[in-house]
Figure 1 (cartoon, helix red, strand yellow):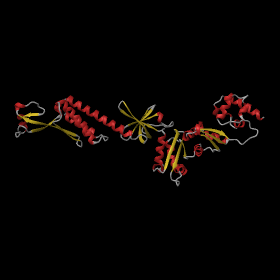
Figure 2 (cartoon, rainbow, N blue to C red):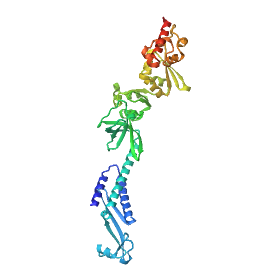
Figure 3 (cartoon, rainbow, N blue to C red):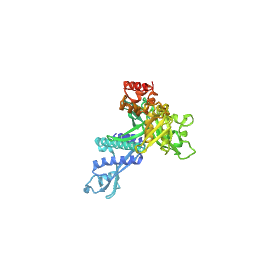
Figure 4 (cartoon, helix red, strand yellow):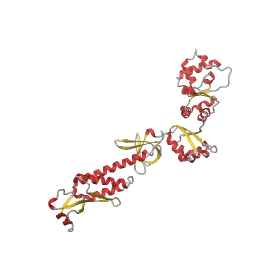
Length: 411
């Protein structure tokens, strides 16, 4: 009975697709031999034969035939009388081989063996998953949502392995339900209490990079290189690309006719706005392109501080800064320069520098106005009141006072 029972367990194990046969056989043999050593003190006179295809095994014991009076070790030796019961032709000095049935070991040994086998297999499975995903860090995987919790989502891959997508690695507008298919990259693989923990991400810049490789053949083939990606997930991204073949327009190739190529990526990223920019080693040109869609008139670089002063027409300023300062922030990250925006105003004879109002407007207020690119009275007056309050973060009364002082100048 117990022999059969073990054979069933054995059949379950041979279904495991992740473990190769050689490993499987050696694990099984080890487990059997450890039982033999416990039982007999040695396993060297046993042959363990494992048949993985059938899902069964045999254990044979070899013993030397000795005179009845000389029998010392019943495991390594067999008395002539006993041997001749098996076959009357046996003589002293020959070897007798007979099969050992597990049932003879007793229930406890067999239970022990099953547990031993199960835990060895578990270990192998864990090692396999850990190794497989360790090699996939930074690659895209697809899985199915199995459970949705507040802080994370449990996803199963096609082998049924568990992957975790934490809330912090989801795009803010991501919304998943059980059964949905999810694409993400393998972000990190850790061992927690000896269990492999596979963490995915949809917010890492490398996820966007892999999507570009999937959707744009020239990137996959290496004709176009991605130099750098910066993104605020779900909001906006800037991708600098470069081609070593002057016949290829890298930006055009990435965007496609009427945006056809980039459309799939934008949809996958929940309508993240993606600016594709032609990389340039010329810093001024690169900063100009990075601030797209704003048109820049002039740039002054301060190399020692890695700062760039950008001058543009008043109506271009809010474009350069972008919603919530996003455009200018990403452009700074992409180029590695801290960017300050200044309005360029036609020389206006009756415009007055803000410094001239130092006796009526406090210094820190003037500084706050200059920080958003306003250095003259007309600069300030050209911006709507609400916009001024929002961008300078100054109190309503402070702004009202400033506007009153400045308007009085031109009345």
